[in-house]
Length: 160
Image (cartoon, rainbow, N blue to C red; front, side):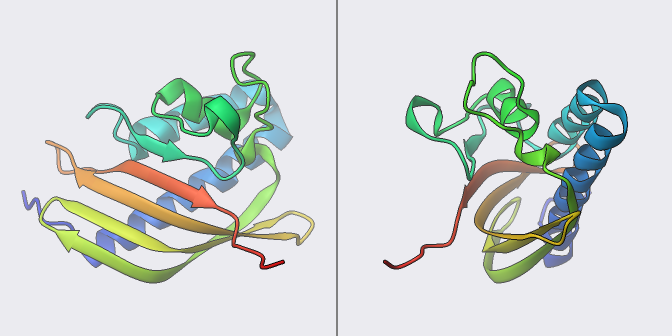
């Protein structure tokens, strides 16, 4: 098993993340919160490195004392909402997403650690587009799976 991360693995990881976002949205619309939560739980377990320690997660639309989400519970709440501990979460992944495309600015790979930075463009079922500035840090785990250990997201700066 090779431990060195490749650009192809980074591409596949971003596609998997975007596909999960779409699947969570569709499950919520078709079968409700429980179905969306089940898919979100699976996506978190498959993509994120909570098995390695805290994940450095700064969601796009989080603020105050809950801006940073190093726990799995905080991430799940961000994606599907409906958690009394995180009352401001509206559920980013249940907003009707239909397409997620990433545009790479740059990536850095050194052995079993990689970082990626760029723009992620999410389109909802009504054609509305949300552009996000993203940085992801990845580490390969003992089974050779690429895990997100850093996820920073923000809206593009709008000069005033």
